[in-house]
Length: 81
Image (cartoon, rainbow, N blue to C red; front, side, top):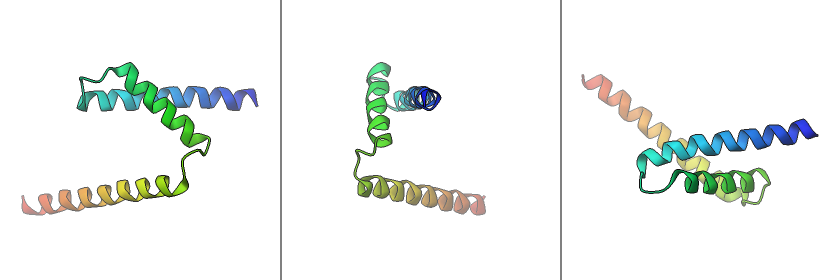
């Protein structure tokens, strides 16, 4: 049980820092520590199941849709050149 808890603490911290670093590239005016804090809270709430499943499912659908459209556009560009 202790190792499981320890793993989640490490995984959440690494994911929050990595995500904050990526978002900080897009929005450099927001402090990195604030982005990491917000992402830590969001990941923790999601891990505890406190987000409604419809929100998680809808956001997953939107990201998959974006990924598919991006892939198709890249294929179209590659066929042009």
